[in-house]
Image (cartoon, rainbow, N blue to C red):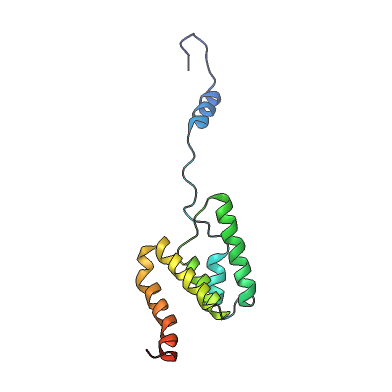
Length: 128
């Protein structure tokens, strides 16, 4: 290949220049890490530890996502809510499920169903 000034560029130099100009494609949309495996094991009831340990792992995952500017994957907050509920934190579960609805509106029917079940015991305790 000859340049405008009559210099010849070796083929590898042309390839290197073109490679340098190429833009890297977008990265992953969500920060998944070990979340799918943890969720699978929890749903199989084999779990990777007590709910408290799992909550700590999910909180670390969320912090890493925040630090890197990555989005949490679909179902992450819903799973977090289930773990919080199993640990007796109904308010934490509610907040996580509302956050899941906000992040993924397509989850609304399921999150509404979970929220409704969360409210059911309260209604039976305090008939008004």
